[in-house]
View 1 (spheres, one colour):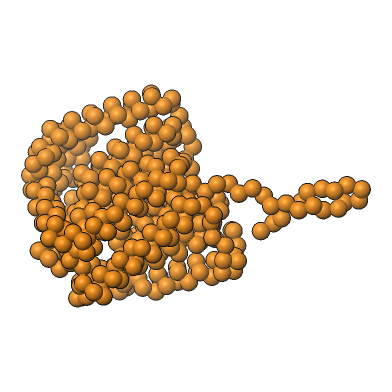
View 2 (cartoon, one colour):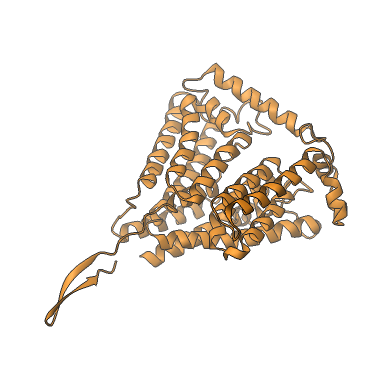
Length: 407
């Protein structure tokens, strides 16, 4: 069962982590991937049952199960007693699917080998995603995945979601790259994030890479790595904030790949972008905060932000989204996910925890995207204690020897 569980973990992260399932079902078949979800969940349950229904003894894994139950209960209560319109039903379905897929992955993540398989799968996912992003950016006429022209997104379609998943995937997968190549790998991911032109993802990449340097993920000594990473980030930040990135693209000979949207995003001051998206995000976040303050105890009901005037662009803040919908409990549940991840104690878990917590300030898609919750589960599982082999006494001639019990 151990090898089968590892294979399923790798297959799930390849399938969902790359967003191939979205492309196959929505783009090619024109229907929701419900059957893919059912097959994934059924496969995980089968392996869990055949494996003796044995779950990990690691406390953070149990806490994550409790979190999933608490979040599902909060959504259900909100839907039944506060808001049960069509938008609420869709929100329950979308978030419920993500949580169900996360739990199904938890059933498979019982051994270190399964975690390793998941991390290796994410290496493949990121290499493919980096390649597709650059092909999409350099040769836009070849195939356009992104819903925002001029901003690479690959099969993730949304540039902000793409950048977020690339960063979270990098944190978990970089440990499977030879140490001498890890910094190069992170820079490659950073380049793919940069051409999404997602400011929050660029910030998340900077935070994650600094964390990796601090935890000695790279070949150089800690303070040398941190110095190089921080220096690179400062130079990039100065050029970005001053609106000089346009010169960098032009010097690389790819300035003609920038359309009006991307040109406006990087040619003016970072705070007051030419595309006015910063002000739009601030406005919808303020509206979500207002909704939360109007009903801080129970919120306006699950899906209520989807049915309000902030529908078109969303709340752009996970804390405020669920604060407005589920009240203070919603905010606490979002915070709890980062706290649980931190308690796993490994470098990848703690970097993921901090990066996720900060990402939630700028994105409202950190719970309704299955791969994000699956990556959170993988980061928690990275803290598994290595199991001691079970042994038994065996009589062998004149000697008593120990024999390892095979699972």
